[in-house]
Length: 187
Image (cartoon, rainbow, N blue to C red; front, side, top):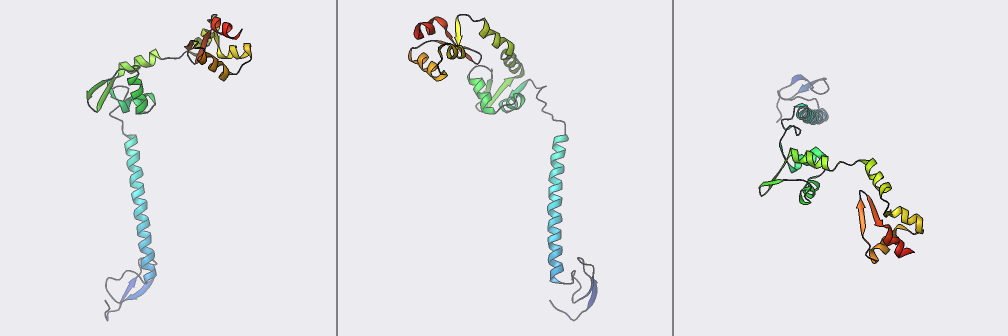
């Protein structure tokens, strides 16, 4: 809206003096108005970003009321976080019977902290023990021993074992086969 008024004002963006035709004019030109608008938008985005960052800092710095090591009963998600695996892996542990759990409701499974500790203690792996088991077993061949002795590939050995229904024994990560059965088959 145009008027006959001429007011001397100072531009809020470039701080230059100009003659305004209304009493509410803030900028000397359309260019300064647009620049100031963009500047205000940028500052608002920065302020929102800083607020979000501060909120995240506050959440992380607060002491967690759900300290998992002190809770007696844990949910499946909490167990996953505690032992460092996914919820699906926790459900596999429950379904295979390695971990005891209780279903309170249709969609609420809880696990006792003592059951987790027991499972972890029962499944401890002692690397030295698994190596000595293979050395101590005199009546079994490992797959590597069969490969060296009979100069065969691992795949061929597994095929022969499968085809002739020879029983394999698992000791840790090793598959063992009775020496009598292999010697009888390959001699």
